Length: 459
Image (cartoon, rainbow, N blue to C red; front, side, top):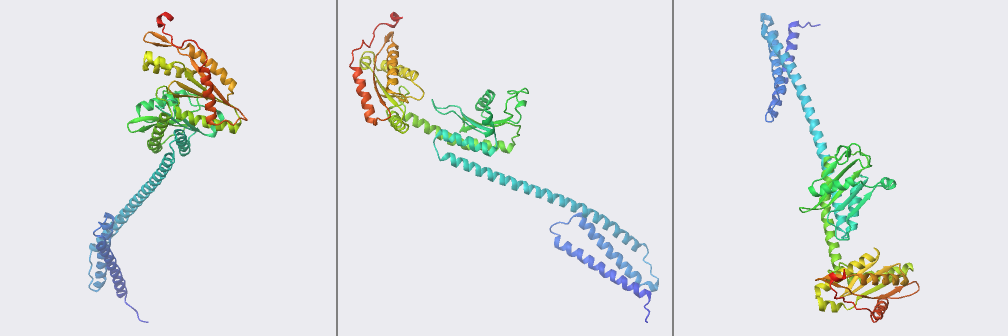
């Protein structure tokens, strides 16, 4: 058995350590060469230095073993190199650990930001889709009532509110000014909105700025003693350009904190839908003007014709009575000739007010032209219409217009026609019958209808 001297064994081990050190140094050099443009951290530099110190220590170890026969002692240089290697390696690994933690923390923060950005993008996309859906739905109609109800219903569903309402600031005369959509729970209790909510809406309309009350008890308008069902609400102005045309109110029966994003969304919804509301208002105004007599504010001939046709159709369908009453001012031309058209117009306006005051809300009061007026009376028999007409003649005879110091009175002729179950009167037949009755009454003997007595003497 061949015995290998221990010196040669140590020399072989030293040679292997040297080769490993050189390979380690080569790996560090290759890493530096590939990543030098990206910039190396302190930890990587320290680790590279530790590899260098390790290579130096192994070189010195190999040199010591190779010169062992001559008793060469490299002294403290080898020990120093090993110590430096260990220190630098420990510090390098520690620094790399810190950098790894920092990099991991940064990657988590980046991931969280990415997730938040994606969530914001999805939320904004969803909100844009909702805005488009609501706007498209509202743009499909010009009926103001439909627009307001659709706005309230869509907003309540999107915001999961208990009540959503819209108040128009300047509604048309006789037009819709309020709409509301409420949850089934609130509807079952019969709860209504408190006047304080109305006051808050007026404040928002005046300022043009939204008001969000996540806890109404903290607001001075309600106070800590507030016992109503409203706990949280938001009021948002409906703007058309620089003008506030209404207020959209979102109400909750439980404390519900509206976030800033939700507030911005409802504000955007209000701004977007205000165009549809304004267009519906303009359409209603146009329709109203087209169907209204400009002098008296009553329905005009066109609206009268449409209403009478609808009433005849309804009466036939439900077999219910309906009546038509025509009015004509006697000697109205004489009034115009003697006092002028301004006096005549003033008398027509006063007589129109009398008709509106004496008629019911369901009646259609119209000026057919000149001094001729009409009232369509649903669910009214000719006998009941006759009683109304006689009472109206008395009221009209008592009405006097003071004009330029004179008291003017006119008498009225009346014609009545009715539709009852079993009678198949058409539009022309009904109007013709009422007109015939009117001229019959007009031919009857009457007292003078223009009184020229000074107003001061009549009092």
